[in-house]
Each structure stands twice: as structure tokens, then as C-alpha cells.
Image 1 (tube, rainbow, N blue to C red):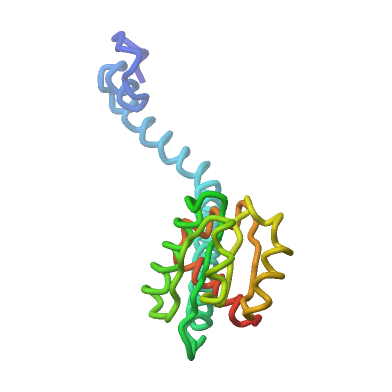
Image 2: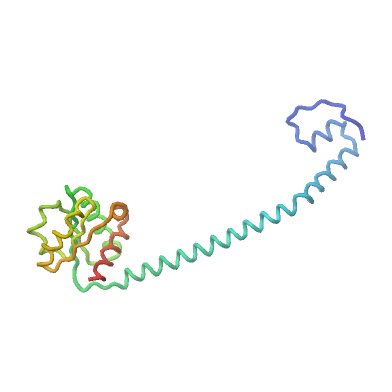
Amino acid sequence: MNSFIYVLPWATPAPIGLILGTGISLLAVVLAVVLIVVDGIVYLPFIKAYDATLLEEEKEKEALDALEEQVEKEEAKEVQTLSLNKNINVLVLCVGAGTSAMFANAVKEGAEIENLPIDATASAYGSHYDILKDYDIVVLSPQVQSHLEEVQQDASKYGTKVVATKGAQYIKLTRDPKGAVEFICEQVKEG
């Protein structure tokens, strides 16, 4: 085989550079083919190991997806199997009725999606005394949960259930209509 007789640009791919740099000699072509085959043989076990890893990850992902789908179906059955024989009226209290309106809207939207007889209203803490008798459940935002015992005492006169929420839970429920309705349905189940 000839030695290199041409200077090629540095970016020329190796097999092509070998063939062109030696003046397209037959032995250079054979050497390039042999080197590619040897490279393939050397890398084949690594490629097979990587492929096995990808297959395993794919199987795990399919199993996880199937499990998530099964959990979603079971959760949907739980919400759908809850039959409410009366309308549930929910009062959401916060300091200024801002975030409580977001929560109440999420409950209304979720009830509409799930076709459940639930209605929700937002109000500010302090303006609830005269309207407690009209509601089945009162949800306190994190800002007013320090008044839980006081509101429970007032609500007990009418048989109204009072629940307090935590910060992250409350914010999440304001953005998740389905979750907000599920939260209310859980409270109804617990009685």
C-alpha cells in the first residue's frame, strides 16, 4: 500500500481520507473495509448491552404506564360510584374571597365535568355567620385555618362540616377541578 501522497483537509472522514490520501489504492480500500468490520466487531457487545438496557427501560415504562392507567380508572370509579342523593353546597372561606373564589370555581368546574350535584360559593371570613345554615361543607383556606375551632362551633348548630386545608394542598386544588371535587367527595364520605 502506498503511503500518503496527498494532504487532505483535517475534516475528511477517516475511511475516505485513507483511500484518497493514498491515491485510491486497492489495498487502502481493503484496509478501510477491514477496519470498519473490526470496529463493528469491537463495538457490537456494547451496542447489544445498550439495546438490552433500552428494552428494559421500555418494559419498565410500559408497566408504569399500565399501573398509572389502572390507578386512574380506579380513582374515576371511586368518584363516579359516589352517588349523592342531595345537592352538596360548599362554602369556601378565605381572608378576602380571592383565593376562595378560585377554589369554588374549581369545585364547580369539577362537579360539572364529573356530573355531580355540587355547588360552591366563595366568601370572606367574617361574612359567613348568617349564611352557614345554607351549606353542607365549609372549606377554610390556609389564611383562616387558625379560626377552625370557632367556625366549627358556629357550624355545629346547623350540622355543617368544616374542614381546613394546608397551603400546598389548597393551591393545588384551586388549579385542579377534578382534585377539588374528589376532595369534597371525600369529605362527604367521611360525614
